[in-house]
Length: 256
Image (cartoon, rainbow, N blue to C red; front, side, top):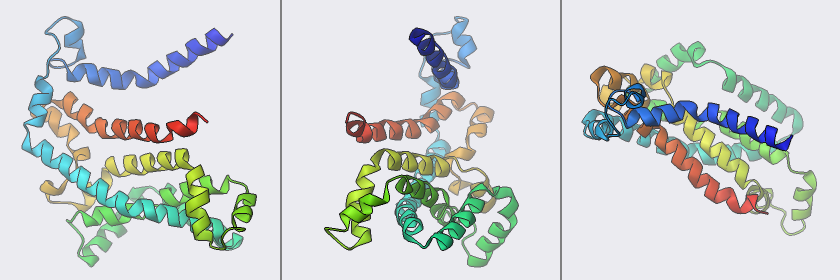
């Protein structure tokens, strides 16, 4: 029975990983993976060379890195403080705020696209990367996720820690958050993936093509034959690298 379960699990994991495997094989072939499987040419780095030699692609990746780094610099502290506020606020008020944040999180961007566009025009942020960074930095995802993590811990831990200090913020930083390293890494990855994969916001708020992120360039690679599969593989690399880095952080906790 255990062997059957293991086989089924491996099969599911393979199905989930299949698109990524196809992408990687295609990125090392001339044209697509079908050419490689049919013996039309061996493994090659031509696509990666073409992608890395494209000034446009490198500029788009730089824009993505700038937007993501600037967003997370604000979003992560806001998420931690927002989660703390939701935990320690009065129940009725916290419930109302959580409901409001949940609505904002689930609301399709298309429904608020026009107000966001007009607001960016009114504030003078339109056609600047700050028009994308600021709304994303205050996304409802982070505070709600941190609140869920913190609220999973028993209230007795706060009460016990109060014997050493009366500061709830000190308890939060020194006692509560270290216990949530695994979950906080997952929140960080989700926040990064959300901003790294933005499409509608930069498309609406950035008319200057030199400011656009890499998420809007993948279709152009196919049209311009500039290493489309290699470009997509490079675009996926930061998420995979961050996941590997976060695993190294949480690994000591998993072994306990």
